[in-house]
Amino acid sequence: MRALLFDVFGTLVDWRRSIATQLEAFGSERRIACDWYALVDAWRGEYVPSMDRVRRGEQPWANLDSLHAASFDRLAERFALPSLSAIERDWIVKRWHALEPWPDAPAALERLHEHFILATLSNGNVALLVDLARHARLRFDAILSAELFKHYKPDSETYLGAAALLGCLPAETMLVAAHESDLRAAAAVGLRTAFIARPGEYGSPPAEAPALPAEFDVAVRGLDELAERLAG
Image 1 (cartoon, rainbow, N blue to C red):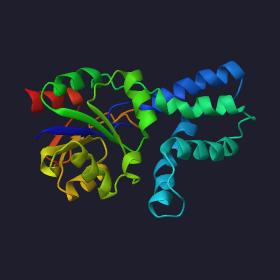
Image 2 (image 1 turned 90 degrees about the horizontal axis):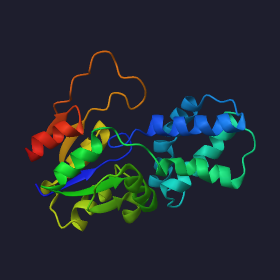
Image 3 (image 1 turned 45 degrees about the vertical axis):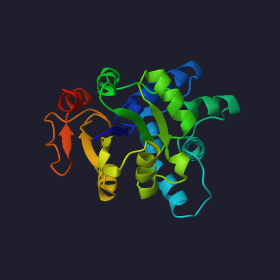
């Protein structure tokens, strides 16, 4: 195995708390009453449907920043937000560029980097991922994005295209993700798979840790454990 490809949202960064806490501060400064966590959950809920419309050809290719902006406009009306300036709207959409990492992510990536090529493989666009990696201090050799292939995951072109760009065969490449559907799609085209449990991605984790899935090559409860397993 030569390369590790990382899903980003939820796997490496805590998107929910990061955005909600920033929007809570934004709303407090402007005296805007809103259940910001509910808005962020709804925003994430628009993620897959918005990409699926592109994947099905119902709308032309649009990068994730554009899809996030369109989704937010719909949600602003649903949540009865007051009129926002273009600058305020852009700032809110760009909160996806400034997410905090899970505590284990930066050090684990540094450790894995000693042994493997590391790259993102996210539906986020390149500019978003560059900003995010710099903000969260996440170490990568390459920023690979669905934008490069004009296909969103789970289309096979993303997984195979990423491996090819790194000069690797699918079997020499492992996708690391917290989402089973993403890993299944990668496995279907020959990539190895590593599941990272993130039980708190959508809120407070359950009292008892759920069982790890057995269908993937590796299944661990954190990136530090993955580094221990793969890098020794």
